[in-house]
Image 1 (tube, rainbow, N blue to C red):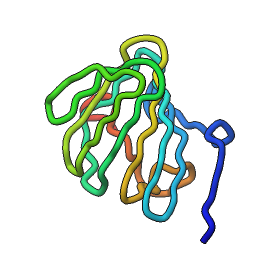
Image 2 (image 1 turned 60 degrees about the vertical axis):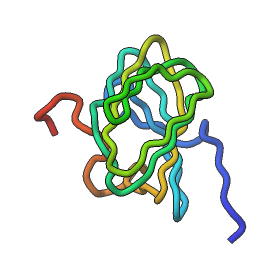
Image 3 (image 1 turned 30 degrees about the vertical axis):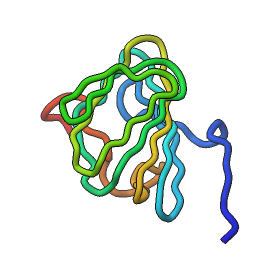
Image 4 (image 1 turned 135 degrees about the horizontal axis):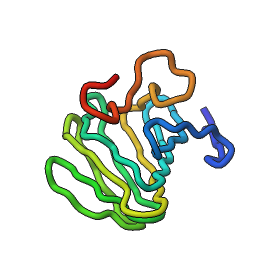
Length: 127
């Protein structure tokens, strides 16, 4: 296998929660998402029991909580979230973008995947 390449700007973007937009790419063993948050947006607390997650903030600022510890992430900051660890976030102002990497791959993030949603409900008790 020689590899694959694509421009994120040419791939489809999907709004997965209000103000939370995802562009997804997947290989066989890892997946990469470009995430764009437009203020105000909230990512409810959730876990990924099936994958480790890494995030790199590429523009803007967001408030992010991992295992109950909240911090403000700025451009260039990196976060590693182990499998099963609760995490959540919210926009701070304007627009922020980050890259997230999952290992193993989370193909359910791809457009057209036929299984259930991967994002938590925007409000408790809603599907």
